[in-house]
Length: 105
Image 1 (cartoon, rainbow, N blue to C red):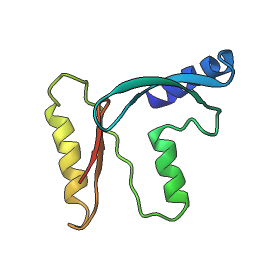
Image 2: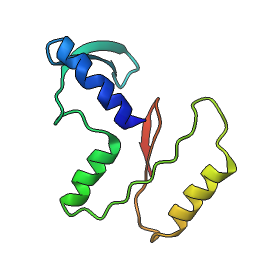
Image 3: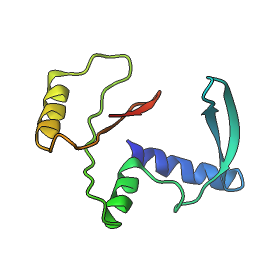
Image 4: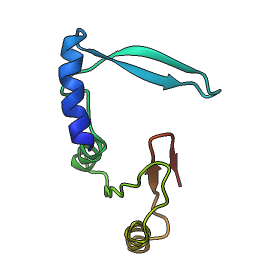
């Protein structure tokens, strides 16, 4: 899904002088939009970001568990999370991301 979004973004950016409109949210919840300049190097999917970090030597693992926004996760989603969380040491950091917010633990 992220790769498809990137494929859609790049032609749109070319159409609008190498920029796309991005919605931003301030820490106090204010919403504003702004043009952001992008190209094939600067527009990265989450997987591409993790691969760059891995290539730089960070001990990192990317697991994508797609859950439809506004719907309850399936039991298989919990199984995937449980297996991945249980298979690492207790001092491992996790990053969970959704469409609305990102949070870490």
